Length: 359
Image 1 (cartoon, one colour):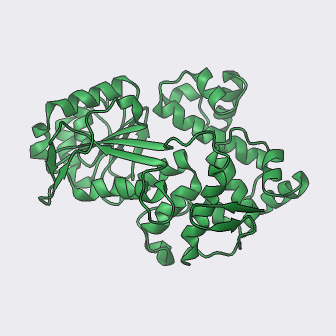
Image 2 (cartoon, one colour):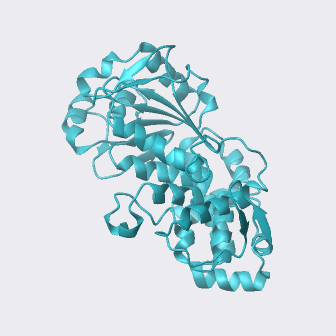
Image 3 (cartoon, one colour):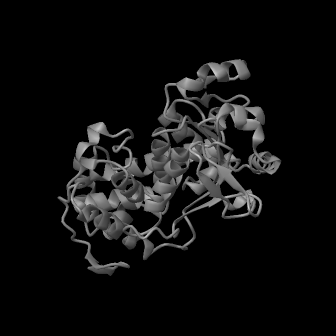
C-alpha cells in the first residue's frame, strides 16, 4: 500500500531498523503522521498555545516553548503552524524586552483564551514582575476562570501565586528562586526537584531545559508520540542520548520495537488517545490478523493490545481530570468508557485513588 505525503511517496513497509541518528528518521516520523492525516476527522491545530511575556523574560524560555511546537507542527523543517499554533499576545505595538535586551513584539491581540489549549506566562527578573501591562494579569485571571490551563514558566510561578492561582497546589520553582518564593508565599508548597508539575489546571516549570521536557509531554499528549519524537530528535544530540537534558523514552516508546507494524500500532493508539481503537481495528490497519497482532504486541511491548489501549485512555483521562473542568461523566465518555462508574473503577485500579482525588 502506498500513501502520498506532502514531500514524497511512502510505503507502509518502511524499513523498521531506521536508527534515530540517521537523516531519514525525521522523514520516517513525518510519514507516520501523513498516514494519520489521511483519516483525520478535522484539520484544526492539535495544540494551540497563547503566550504572555513579562518584562525581562528569559529568551530561552520563549524558544523552549516555540521551537518544539515548530518542529511538531509541520513536515520536515518547513515551520508552518499547521498542527501546532502559538501566539504572543499584547496590545497593538506592544513589545517585551528580554533579559538579554532583545525586543519581542506581540503578534496577536488578547485572543479569547478558550481558543487556546494553554495560556503561558513567562516571568521576568523578580524586581520587574509588577511592571507588566495590567491587561496581562487581567487576561490571565480570565483564562483561569474560563478553565483554560495556565502555565507559569520560570518566575511565572510567582505571577500565578500573586494572582491567587496556585492556592491548594504545589509549584515547581528553580532552586535559585526557592528562598524568594518561600519568603513571598510562605503558605504555598513548592518543589525544586521536578522538571515540571501539573496540578489541577496549573502547570509550573522552572525554566531552562526543563521546558523541553514539559513541551515533549504536551506534544505527546495532544499530537501523538511521533510528533513528540520528532521534536526531541530535532532539539537534541540523539547519538548521545545519555547526555540529553530531557527524556527521550517517554516520547519514543514506539521505537522500543523493531517491528514497523507494532510501531505504527502504538502511534495509532496513542494518537487517538485510546479512543475508537479496538485491537481488531488496529490489527487490520497494520495488516495483521488479530491473533498475530496480539502475539507480536505482547512480545514487543510487554502487554496485550487491550491493556495498552486501556492504559492510554486512563493516562489521557488523568490529564483531563487534572487540567480541565469537565465533569467525570464527560471525561469517561471522552476517553471511551460507557459510564463514569467503569471509568472510576479502572482509574482507581491504575492509580490507587479515585479520579476526584486528583482535582
